Length: 68
Image: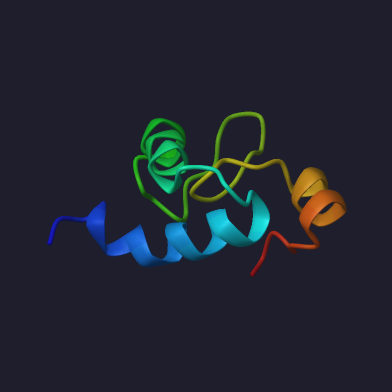
């Protein structure tokens, strides 16, 4: 199993939960592009995590605290 494949089940689960009907592989490609599968990635503008979501968006739209 490569580094990207270890995230598959998590990506599949959350894709179906957050974006029902969306192909989870599309989200996986987005994650590869945004963070190269580094969950600790932080962009120069402050976006964080695998999908490089801005903290205010994560908290406001998804109820996700940036420290968790």
